[in-house]
Length: 174
Image (cartoon, rainbow, N blue to C red; front, side, top):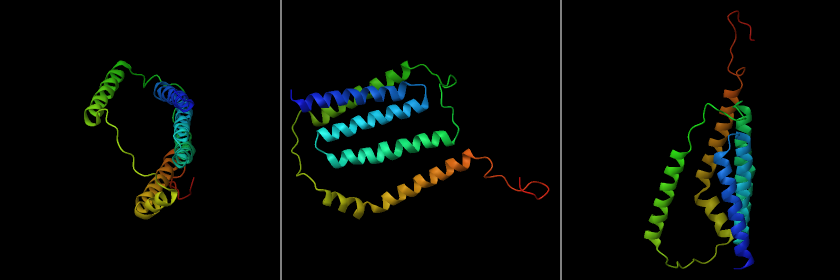
C-alpha cells in the first residue's frame, strides 16, 4: 500500500463521514458546513488522482458557489436554522431503502462490468476540455446560469414581503 492509497482512504473516510453528517444533522447551517467538508475531501481525492483541473472546478463551483448559494438562500428565506422537531421522522425506513438501493446498484455494477480491466483512453488536455465546454456545451451552461439567477431573484422576492406590496386603499404607498 502506497502513500497515495493511504491518502485516498483517509480522504474517502472524511468524505463519507462528512456526507453522513450532512444527512443526519438536524441543523441546516451545520449541514451546509459539513457539505463543504465533504466536497473539499472530494477535491482532495481528485488532487491525489492527479486530476487538478477537476479538483479546482470542484472547489470553485461546488464549494465556492453551490454551498454559498445554499446558505445564502436559507438565510434569505428565513427558514428555521436550528433543530426542527416537526420534521423528525424515524430513520430506519430510509436506512432500509438506502441499503437496499446500495446493494442493488452494487450487484448491477458487478453484473455489468464484473472484475474486468477497462482500457483507459488517452489523457485529455485543458485545451480539449475548453473546446468541449465552450463549444458544444455553451448553451446549456448559459441556460443553467440564467436559471440559477432566476432562482436567486425568486428567493429574494419570496423572502421580502415589502417588495410585492402595492399602494394602499387611499392611493399612498406604504
